[in-house]
Amino acid sequence: MKRLLCILSGMNVGGAETFLMKVYRNIDRLQYQMDFCINEKEKCFYEDEILSMGGKVYRIPSKSENLKDFKKQLAEIIKINGYGNVLRITSNAMGFMDLKIAKMAGANVCCARSSNASDGYSLKLKIVHFLGRILFNKYVDIKIAPSDLAAKHTFGNKTYEDGKVNIIHNGVDLEIFKFYPEERVRIRSEFGIDDGTKLVGHIGRFDEQKNHAFLIDIFASMIEKDKDLKLLLVGKGNLQDQIKEKAYKLGLSDKIIFAGFRNDIPYILSAMDVFVFPSFYEGMPNTVIEAQATGLPCIISDTITQEANITGLVEYMSLGNADNWAMEALKVVSSERIDTKELFIKNKYDIQSVTSEFVDKIFDCK
Image (cartoon, rainbow, N blue to C red):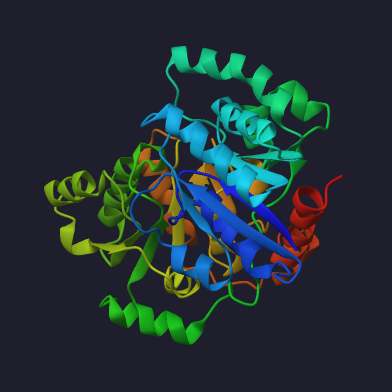
């Protein structure tokens, strides 16, 4: 059996973590296994599922917490368990240190997956990231990314243009992600949403990248034009209280549902009527891909790669004018659902195609 060690900060709900879990659920676990080295001290969202599938979870300090112990413990994990293949999930070139340690500890194949198309860096950190790519590329044998923008950001334009980055899509299990008419009724009943009420939706952690403050402005503008609307926000994060306070000040508290983490995302998406996603930047947003799999129209920021529009259901908007976003969202909020399964398969966004490519590039690479 081949075992892959994945290095990342934690295994909670997030784009990169969700991507790994989708692949993990679909690999042949008699031949391949995935283990995880994390810094998160608390129990993670996916931890029980990982253990139930035969995976291992190692906890070590973060580099910022204790660099010496980080190096020592990561090296020991790789040496003692004989990991030949190591995958570092990262959005910046600082991940080179982890892969340098892995090489020195005996790993034969060091892989890196870009997880974002930006990090909102200060100028100083941008310079460090630019210079770090030189070392990063030295220790990375296999480079993968979910989109062109994520590939260029993490590995550099030249590396991408030279064809040295493998684009592996954020695939979807099309047997799970589809439109559920019955679950739409149930979820809407759970949240007290009437049949005639249109539900605006968003899924994402509450932090600066996701731009929830602007999302609230968009929804406020929509309410001015149509009172029979509600907004469903799925996720948690440091800025949740701040967003709740903004909603209260705008008199929208009774119109906005803060649902926290959910493990029934296909049903949640089925309950929505339009998906609004004004992120400042993304690698390749899982939630936008999943929304399309359920036939849900999406309004997203034009900072996100054009590759995210798999089905024609995505409308790109410039950040800045909430009224423009509101008008576009209201145009599609009553749209009929379409079946997008064949488009996903054609464009190789089905999880079977993605898993096969991941195994070929990461587990079975020469």
